[in-house]
Amino acid sequence: MSFSKTTLGAATIAIIALLLGGGIYLRLRPAPAEEEAQAATEAPSLEVPEASLASFARRAQPVTGARVLRDTLWIRIEASGRAAAFRRATLSARVSGQVREVAVRENDPVDPDAFLIQIDTTEYALALARATSTLTKAQADYEQIVLFDDEIADPEVRAERARVARSRSGLDEATVGVREAELKLSWTRVSAPFAGRVAELQVVPGQFVAQDVELVTIVELDPIKVEAQVLESEIGLLEEGRRATMTFAAFPGETFTGRVETINPVIDLETRSARVTVLLPNPGGRIKPGMYASISLDAQHFTERILVPRSAVLERDRRTMLFVFNEEGKEVGHTEWRYVTTGLENNQVVEIVENPETAMVSAGEIVLVDGHHFLGHGAAVQIAGGDAAAAGAEPSAGSDR
Picture 1 (cartoon, rainbow, N blue to C red):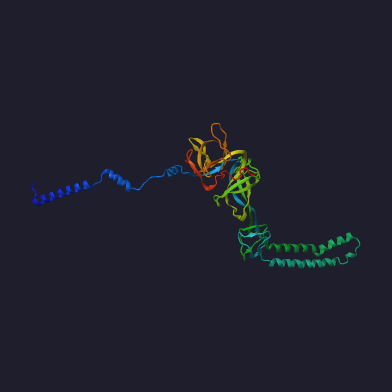
Picture 2 (tube, rainbow, N blue to C red; picture 1 turned 45 degrees about the vertical axis):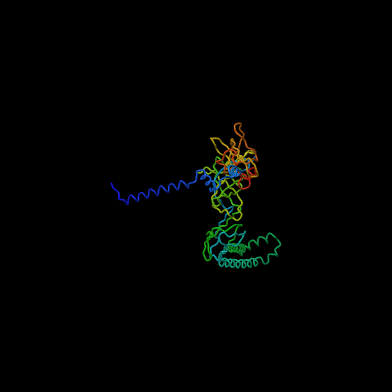
């Protein structure tokens, strides 16, 4: 194959240019040592102070701690129940008539004998006037019959004539008529039977009501009672006056404390349970009748027990253990892994019992209750929240009941 002179000339020029460029690069390229020095000069320094490395290695894990307690352990009975008014009265119309005035609204607070509802008095005022007139006439007739009886010397004869005269004049019947009319007139005014709040107001002004129609309900809400159903197998463990704690669905995260007021001695044949009534303070009427409650009732108790919160107890390698906080400063320290043996427990605390094969904790030590699930022995930790003594057991587990 033949090439033209032009093509051969262009190829020769290209080869010469490549050779010249390579030679120039090799002459100008720095030596490897110089490259490394230049890179070291231009690259930013990544040195980390030894103190920072030590601090990073010992960074404390935030955790929550609670004191170990020596206290009374209460075994509790769990039940469910509903709130009910301490007292409840449904007021009905004792006379018929038109409602003239309604002085309250639902949820209004009322005092004893407070005015609630007024029924029209016209009919009953007229009846009282009529009865009074009848009494006046009967009184006149009576006095006419006994006009000269004061001249009778024998007191027994005078008393007998007076009795007959009262009967003949109709004085006794007229007296009863007036009292009856006065009573019916008083029934037109509906009053509160006790201090409480208005509930279920069922009438409005202008409405006609018949006798025995329900008008309004008054409830007393402070204290309020909670009625729980307790199984017959557990009812024998309860006593009146013991503490009860409860939570309501309406107030998540809030716990209320009351006392066992009564224990019904009759077992329901269908549910095999008995009603237990708990009273608790209810200032402001926050808890409403009908609210659902989860209740914990104090039953058996065991004194002088070493107690830790349930959340402190973990299981590792099929063995029960917990972490004790060893202080190095006010709130900073490290963990100590201890295998322990547990005893009785309730929903809040667990008893730690002595066992020659496991360790023990002492009252006053701090155990970890949160943030400790993935720690190891000797881990650096810091008590979060600033209060290493926050008790994980319930307040005053041994308080009087």
